[in-house]
Length: 94
Image (tube, rainbow, N blue to C red; front, top):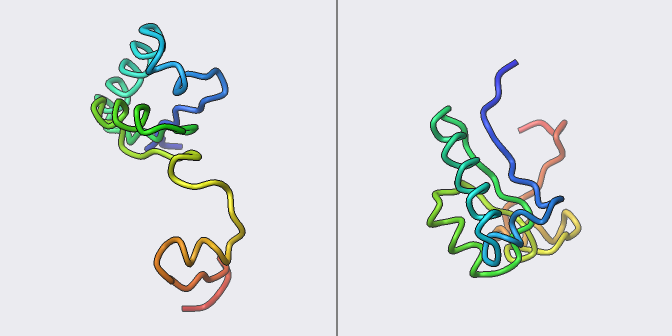
């Protein structure tokens, strides 16, 4: 089994803390750096503010998700958010 992604989950409030706490910032920076040195992508979960997103961007975080990007929504609304792409079920034929 290979790993190709690291997810910074915000269950411990790591992402919330990066703008307020030097220890949280140091931990996030270390995780991102270590993941990149292993050629892994990093996804930060729980991004809620522009300040958090800007800081994660400065740390070269690859992807972000959270309320800043979008609140949870039904599948039919996702197509609208993504510019009208047609949604297909996983088992649908092309």
